[in-house]
Length: 139
Image (cartoon, rainbow, N blue to C red; front, side, top):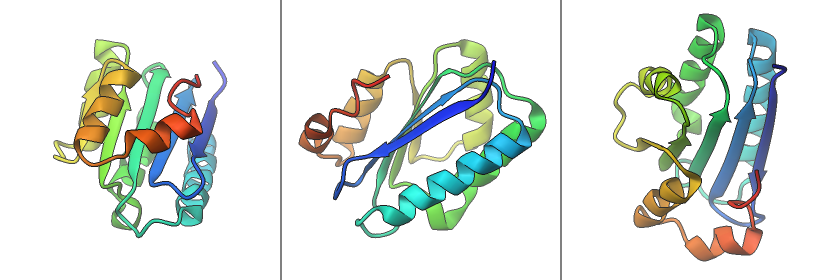
């Protein structure tokens, strides 16, 4: 399954939606990192004040090298989200994501986008921003 990703944010908002699909090798993981960093730099909110939802329901378990690259991305202080919600469909993928996030309190794993969005909104995300952008319903 070829890797594919989509990174979206509503202009002027503090919400970033990331959708990952397929099997990432180190080169595709690095391409994702570059595009994710560019999207974060384009956001107008202050550093570390954005909310991120990452949907990995279309990702199988990733190879160790790619998983390590994703873990490094998540741990990089300059790019950390205020809150980060993962949407994961399988229990095995949930275990891999749990290993990647390393017990960080500002990160949570959810079974659905709706649950992830509820958690982000409880932490301060403006639900209206997401609704106006129509990001959450996109797959």
